Amino acid sequence: MNFYSFEPNLFKELVSFNANFIPNNMAKGLVKKEENYSQWYNEIVIKADLAENSAVRGCMVIKPYGFSIWEKMQSVLDGMFKETGHQNAYFQLFIPKSFFSKEANHVEGFAKECAVVTHYRLKNCENGGIEVDESAKLEEELIVRPTSETIIWNTYKNWINSYRDLPLLVNQWANVVRWEMRTRLFLRTAEFLWQEGHTAHATKEEAIAETKQMIEVYAKFAQEYLGVPVIIGTKTENERFAGAEETYCIEALMQDGKALQAGTSHFLAQNFAKAFDVKFLNKDNKEEYVWATSWGVSTRLMGALVMAHSDNNGLVIPPKLAPIQVVIVPIYKNEEQLADITERVDKLCQSLKGKGISYKFDNRDSQRPGFKFAEWELKGVPVRIAIGPKDYENNTWEVARRDTLSKEIISNDDILNHIETLLVDIKDNIYQKALNFRAENTHRVDTWDEFKDIIENKPGFIEAHWDGTSETEEKIKAETKATIRLIPIDPEHEEGKCVYSGKPSKHRVLFAKAY
Image (tube, rainbow, N blue to C red; front, side):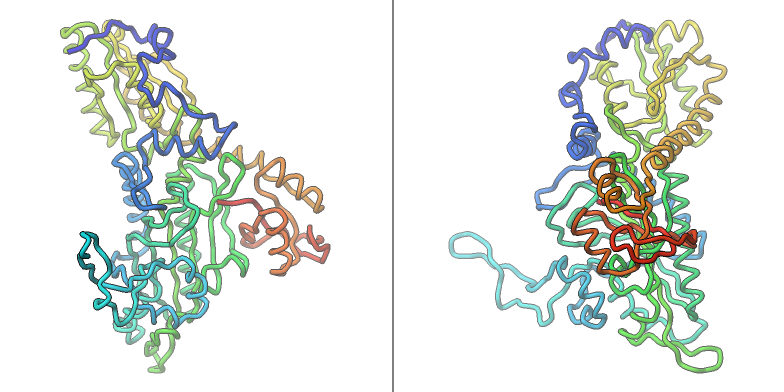
C-alpha cells in the first residue's frame, strides 16, 4: 500500500500543478474553449470518459461513465412520460422500403440519410475473403429505421378500431440510423440513441394539446434537470419535421453562441393515418381518420450538457444527472490514519445513502490524491470532499464545489446539511449562469448590416423581423449560415420590416447559427 503525507490545506500548493501527480492525459490540459471550441468539446467528451469514436465511421461507443448520465436522463424522462399517461413499447429496427413511399414528404425528408439492407447472407470466397451472397437478395429492401412513424402507423392500423381505443399513447426507447456525412460525438452521429413518442387521437384538438404538452415536458426537463434554459417555439415550414403539419421545438444557446435544438414535438395531423389507412369508428358510428403526434429527444442532450456548462478544467455536470454527486478523497500517511478516516467516511456515506445522494469513496491506493482530484474535476463531479489527519482531529471536512472551484472547511456536525444545500445551490447556479449567458448574447437588430455584424462577430440569438417567405429564409441562410431557429409561441405583436427584404412584418423571429 502507498501512503501520502499531504494535508488538504497544503495539497494544492504541493501537487495541483505538478505533472508527476496528474495522469498523462490531464497533465497536458484541455485546449481552452476560447481558442478552439470544437477541439475543447471533443477533448472533454473523450478525456472525461463519456464516449469515443467506434471502428465504424460516424458511429460512437458510449462509455460507462457517459452511459450512466444517459441512464439518469432516461430515468427522469421516462417517469415524466408515464406521469402523462404514456406507456413504453418496442418496434422493429427494419422498415420495408415500400412503407416510405406512402408518405411523400416523409420519404423526401429522410431519403439521403437512409441505410438500406439489400441481402441477408454472406459467403466465403476462394481467396479466403467474404462477399455478399447474391442469391440471398431480399425481395424487398429494408430501411434501417431513421425514425419509426411508418412502421408504427402500419402497426396502429391493427390496434385502432373505435374511439374506445383512443387516445393511444406510446413511447419507444431505441436506436436509429441516419447516415450523416459530417459527424461529432453526441451531436451528430450515424447511429444514436433516443426516445420517440407516437400518439393517436380522436380529434385534432386532442392531438395539438398532446404536441404542446410534450414540448413543455421537454422544456421542464431541460431547465430543471439539465440546467439549460430553453425557448419554446414553432419551426418554419422549411425546418419542420418531414411529414408534420406543425413542429414545436426547444432551442438552447451553447457557450460558443450557436443554437442547439434540444427537443421537438410534431403535430402530424392525419397525414400518416391516411397514408396507412388508420381509421376509427367515432361515437356516432362514423368512420374517421385518427389524428397523430410524434416527439423525441436523443443523446444530443449529452452534447448540450457538455457545451452549456463545462469549462477549461473539464466537465461540469448538473447534480440531478451526475452519476456521482459526491466524491470523497482520503489523504493519509499510515494505515492507522486511513482506518480512522475510513470509519468516519463510512458514517458519512451511510448518511448520504439515506438521503438518496450518490457518492464514491475513492480510497484507491494505486493513485495519488492529486490524480484523483484532477480526475474527478475533469469528470465534473459536483462536490468533492477531502479529509486528512488534521481534518479528522478537528472534526472537519474540506468541501470543494465543481461549478465555482471554491473550497471551504465544514464541521462534521454540519456536513450532511451542507452537502444537501450545496447540491441545490450548484443546480441553481449552473442554470443561472447559462441564463445570464443567453441574455448577454441575445441581440435585437433591425438592419441587415447589424444582422451580418452580429452573426460574424458576436454569435448568439438574434431577434429580427422576417417577411414570412421561404425565399427570404433561404437567402439569409445562404449568405450568413444563420437559420430561423423558431417562431415564438404567441409572439409579441410589433409592426416592422423584414431585416433582409424590407417587406412588412408583424413580429420578430429567432435566428442563429446552429448545430
